[in-house]
Image (cartoon, rainbow over all chains, first blue to last red; front, side, top):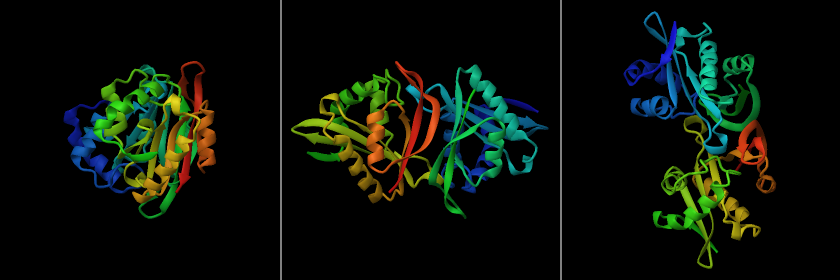
Length: 160
Length: 160
């Protein structure tokens, strides 16, 4: 298993994961109907770094890292992680999150923030909690879930 | 006094206000050294709407409105307001914030969120509080203030 920076040529292998995750509308604040071109912009162009997690020739996950706020907020980064359904339950998100914290520190960031964690995403919340992230905010009815309707979103934060 | 949508030709009158506010590094999460071109992108191009507040031929203030998160978060908007130093203390931010809430509702938004209010910005916090915004998050040491160092930033929120 190996985590390395994604190249533009990797995108055709990232896209099915992005599409699978985003089309559900259950976890990410991206348009559910995002096209491949929009996904490329969101996941590879806009972030500062994008990584791909490979094992046995398969893409087991991907994550991005970017500066969360410019200027006086630029010491805090933000990350997003995706694991395809067939690779879930094996701790890969933990591995990626730990990797991203190491990368963040190397890049000089002091903290990491998740801006918009759907309160229904209990697995993710439990995981970030275990990895030392604190719930520092709760946005009332800020997440429009496809089946649950307007639910709260959490802001989670860790000083690195 | 009149609040109207800003046109590209208004930008040369908005820029001195933007520059005055942002160069202090005390309130906005923009690069302190942002150029006029970057400011145009930030304040006029990226937002969904930008307004200008005029009185006696002067620009008394400006604000933008944009969607805060895409997809499942797109019913929540975000705004930013600026008043030049010579026009402060006259309640113009209140007028603009009330105007922006009306515009937001007309555009179909259900809530308004301020993502990154420096905890040192007591005047603004008191004002948003008075206008019905609730502090729903506190980001520890997320704001690097030019004289106070790392201070907390608040997340404020109002269901419209």
